[in-house]
Image 1 (spheres, rainbow, N blue to C red):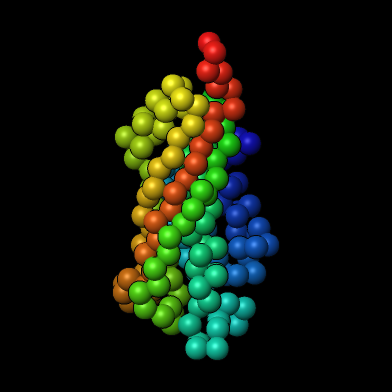
Image 2: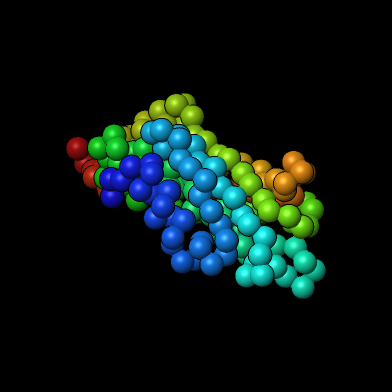
Length: 157
């Protein structure tokens, strides 16, 4: 679905699975090349150790690389599906404060993706996400593997 950066930001801010976990999309950069996300610590996502639940952090990391690739490719005219294939998460420090991260996809990532979509019909890429607390301390490292399929690819042509 074609949307603008602003529309998608507000749709994601109000999306119940993110909203109730206090996951806030700060904004998408022009052309969907990057997104900044915050996880606000609250009663709704605090565990008995007074840190943010790991599941909340995992949920914050999960959708954004596929979303960036999807939006970039749809705006270029591709008919694709994009989703998280897998995430490897390493909790380094307890998340005792709000968290934030910013991720981006490069022109090279997009060029490699388009080449694969046009030649084999699918593309996989693993990219990092580093999630920091308010003081700048690295709390969580994630490796996010995204899978993208070109729905119009026909290998017989």
